Image (tube, rainbow, N blue to C red; front, side):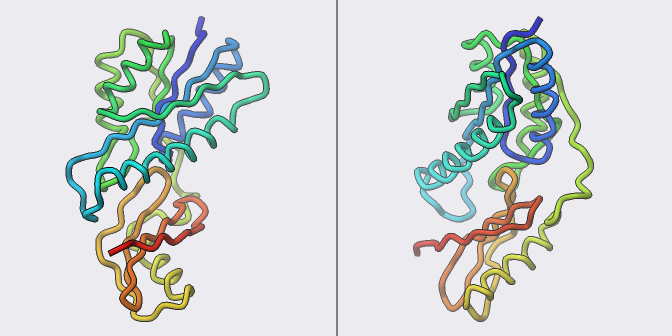
Length: 211
């Protein structure tokens, strides 16, 4: 019945909820699974980064998200990964048409950069406009999420920057979510950083920002 299944994902908890169901269906029918990450950069940029730098950051995130999603495939399931840019719902629909997708499996909502909802509005548009079947999944409880709120992300970011040897740590902007990460812009000893915090595990990495 299904030969090709598409999973659009931004790496969020909600988007991740679709992956397991998509692979279950793929196993049942021997379908090929396509994992699609769309770079949808808004004109608004709270960090005053150039568009090229913002896109580059999303491309790295996209590679990580699509690779990790593909690695979860059961043995014997063929997986194709893709990263495209543009309006998310348009790219999803165009990809489905170009690759003769029989079923699109999506989460009910998700969050991406610039602190805005993506998969919620995108899912609604895809449901209305897709010529084929669309399966919408609901995320499981977020009780297992280690860093669930912006306040927790701020506390974690302060702790990490201080542990890195910097004093007088301050948070410059409200945290925002990019895929499965919180991004917290901080400053310590006059040096600015983006602290990336995995919402599920609490693991962190620090990127120094150029002035």
